[in-house]
Length: 176
Image (cartoon, rainbow, N blue to C red; front, side, top):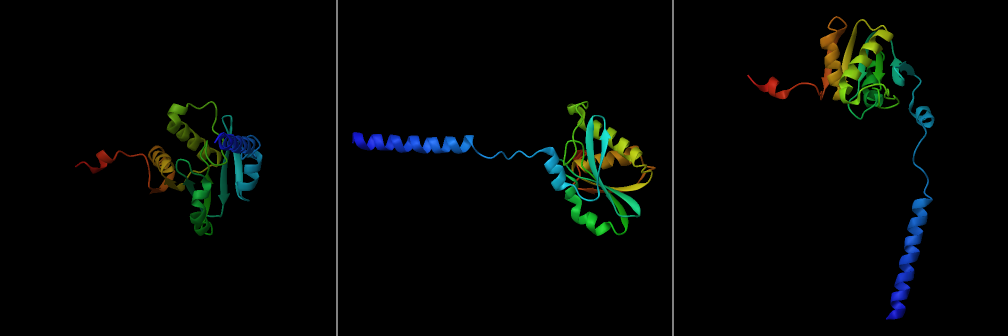
């Protein structure tokens, strides 16, 4: 009986040792920012500086500009299929909102007022790209940002498409 206990203890120690060795010597899955940028950016990728952050967007096609804004946790790639269908007739601009995709979030922005930061960013973006007239498509958080842009700049936003958008109070919409 004592021999079985010693063998069991030895097996457990060996297993624990193997597990600890594997954990301590595992390959890091953390990717460098440069490697991620190289692997995810497209030929139409561009970067601009906003505050102290590098912000990514794509710009492709010709024609009337259509700005596509992704939702929370998203990236410009969420509109890949739609952009592919539309880029022969429109200028398709897809943004990675600050803090998402290939874009950094400025350290100078107030994290509690992030929607205000996104409004400021969009105003900067529209001015920088000289977008005086455009269509905007927004999904989720991007819908909220697009909605606010249409309210603040009705002279610029000619059409607005909201896909499962955040940003409005359903109680107010549904109440008579």
